Image (tube, rainbow, N blue to C red):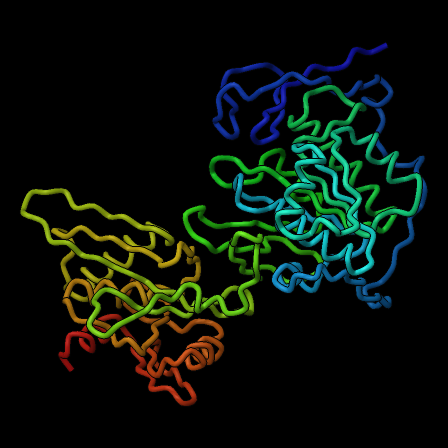
Length: 455
């Protein structure tokens, strides 16, 4: 009988090597290769291909009738928004986030509300004892919810228990890195164990129509720990983001086979758990007064939801010979370097002898390229010590040529700004807004002239 081939699997990225080495050639991590037994390849398999011997599958056309998937409302509107309307029967959802960010709290609240609404819910914890989860539920005021609770790490025991009766409508596994399958060797949390455990749980969910939620740990760079194939196996990937020093939390949809991506749900961490934030703009906007330089309001867009955030800039002039610093919080540092270069090369402003600090208020992270114009306006205001009007918002993408380009969903951004009392807007040329005074600029230089009172 042929012997199993030895292989070494990286516990960071999942790449496979046929010999051990100290550093993974794909992700460059050290001491992450662990030996695993490979599949047995017989001489017959080596000589023959897979053409023939299988069963025929049925092929259908694109015009076949397809029913929309049934949704299970979680009872939390912000969670349902990120999911695209609620959990889907037979789907698998992966939620990741930093330790202590509130993943277990959010899922426990959702499980309790669904259970109180008459749904059968099972919550399996591999990290905490059942009493610990029960005490947390009491602190959240959910101790009376009829949630089926268990503390287990064996996938075989979990599926055997759930398969005895009616399958639950929702199954929460907290977390997938603690699960263990006895079909293969390896400690819980290894690439092979995570992949095998997730595969068995997802198969159960698909066959029995249970909505499965897997909690995933994250690495130091913010990605979900374990093999990347785990994100391909599930139907939905949610990222729970936020800073412990700030109250807000954002649930962001990264992948969704049953809905749109880039939708967000906004929560606030309070003593009684996570509460929904119906108006995120009020959370991220601070009290603004006339005469404050270096601040601009930017109407960001998250999926279909506009969120107004405050961009803060500080420019400090240094003595000659000192090395200036560039510090960014909540925005891409490379994007800031590009905006500074365009301001110097196309507009004649000098930042070479100045330290530049940029911050997005409230700990919010901006990825929208439409923030370019708001950042530029904040930098110009800080450098010239001329404040941007407190009732104005700014948005637009800046090209390397200095051109201000239009952005998507401008009307939606202006509508949200007008609803919160803003009366003016700085944006690309051709921008129009009902009930708002709009100043359009074709180039970044025209914005500089407008803010400095040159024309």
